[in-house]
Length: 431
Figure 1 (cartoon, rainbow, N blue to C red):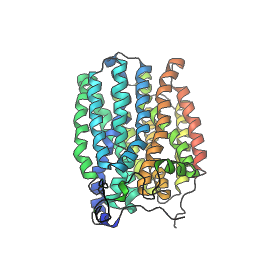
Figure 2: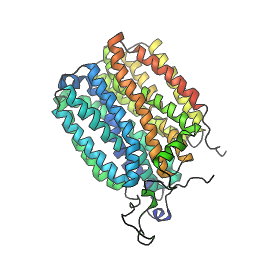
Figure 3: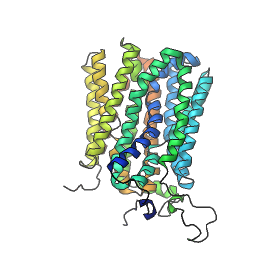
Figure 4: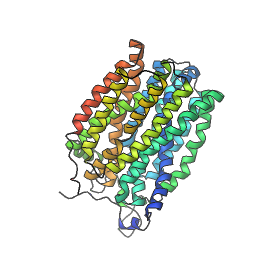
């Protein structure tokens, strides 16, 4: 079977960043594009209770809006991947920045559950889905080359943690200063600034095929990569069929669904859980901030490990560690600020660490254009888990009065994901 091409093309080589400093500089620009949306999405739990008062909604209703946002975020990514193949990554990323800004404005105007559902659940989820990891990674790879893929992947994952680190205390400070409406109005500015950043990140992307191209000469300067069929002429339906015929992809889907459940348990409910223990909101936001720092370290280390250690084994360890660490906190640790910080740091070390080996395994088996769509599909599965976590958190809190049942379900899923990851076989690494 012919190995999939990375589709970077000889014309792109002249436009690639040369040298490690240039690669890192370009990677940092890409990190801003991904980190703003990911950071806002990751810290939405800080705004949960203020949004309850702002929109006259219950905890369960706001949790449901967050759950919907996570589901829409995942569901739109494969669609945006195919739209990018037809139009361009640039078109989709700019669209994402515009929709994300509109969602912030919509939330400021919302005074009911229905308004919050549309602005937070639908618009925010759609905007964040367009600012997708897979699209940003594929555009960055065209600039830096596939040999730097794991470095850029690790940096992008770290960007989500850095966004959380910066935004956690910032959002809480803005809430204290002017309320949730002031926060939302302030966040419109960085969302709009993503538009010029998207222009830079996609500067090495091939031009989309012009309509009416007749001969190869007519289409000179345009790329086959923009074809919706992909490089091998396969349709999206055929691509998905090939993906689900791969045991590796199926195991990744199981693991990433669990990852979404775990991550949104943290992002949507952990802040409120800390305050329920009597921890002051400002202190809880700083614990969240340290969680963000830990995700940076974990993501960067995972990007490095992904070229040293078999990726399936790496994923099995990450999911297994999550299960053990949650059990240690729930059953053994005192529910005080120092242990909340310790728990947050431990969670952060594996928080975004699963993305680099997951993306790496997809890139090993599929072409660059296909991988962008399939990584988006995996994020859809991720967000199915996220929807379940955000929604069930509110339901189980009302039913049990606490968070233990949610965490026990998370532990069971992490054990399942660890066992599934052990069955993944990637490329044999050279010694």
